[in-house]
Amino acid sequence: MNKIAAIAAICSIILVSVIMGLYIADSDKSENAFALTITDDYGEKVTIPNNIQRIVSLSPSTTEILFAVGLGDKIVGIDEYSDYPEETKGITKIGSYLTPNLEIIVSLEPDLVFVSDMTSKDDVENLKEKGLTVIVLAPITIDEIIQDIRLVGVVCNNVLEVNNLTDNLDERINLVTSKTNNSNLDRPRVYIEYFPYWTYGPGSFGNDLISMAGGTNIAASTATEYPEITTEFIVASNPEIIILTIGPMTSTSVEDIITRIGWDSIDAIKNDEIFTIDDNIISRPGPRMVNALERLAEIIHPELFS
Image 1: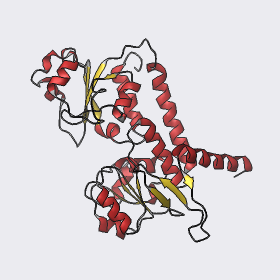
Image 2: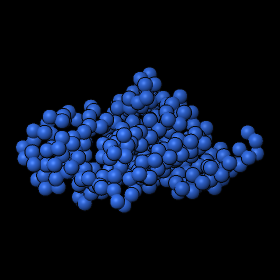
Image 3: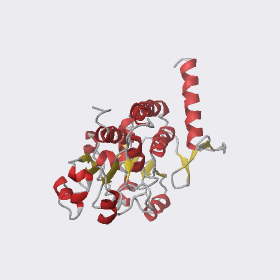
Image 4: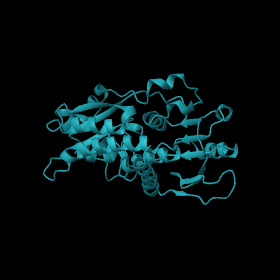
């Protein structure tokens, strides 16, 4: 590596550290000198071991991030829902993120364990008590997803690869928003259903995606990020576009939507504006979230994204 490349790499690490609110701990003149200390999404300070070689991922989105930045060969254990990319099939399964097998995780001797907010705080504490280093990634917004991808790069000393990924994601996001940020753009009312009557509310990445794709989320003013809403609310909101997720977590079909009692007055039903989207790309806060944005943009504004 020449001097310019070396300086660029160092600057990149420093820049990402500032963005993430990270800091490098003071040297303690011990074997842990120069260790990196970060703050995870639960606000917990975590000291990262040097030379990470063995990683357990208890989150499908983190698994996808690790593979996307070339760290798949360091993963020694994953949750049973981590099914992308294809290479995950050969990795040891350690239960689900809801009910992880702590004994198997410990036996894998990981240097680092990534979990999401779907894993209970008790399980997180139990892993820590067993001497494991645990980082919680629980992004809510699109910006936080990008920040967490950058955090993975800092933690795993893979900043340049992560920067390449996030630069590409930012470029693809900008290609969409450069067309949908037009103040004269018609922004149709959109309802996304990821489980019967459950949708994305304010402050969620789903709400971000709808807005960035040029739509108006009918649940944007509800009380929580992931509200359960009623038929009465949906009918009164009269969405012009209905999008339902398709995948292992839901069995709802387009026919189910069409035949719901009282829904025949909804514009989306009357105008046959009902669409589907892969649940995995819109429910996992990882790199494929941009795939979801591009799919939503095609649905909401086909005149712009044909």
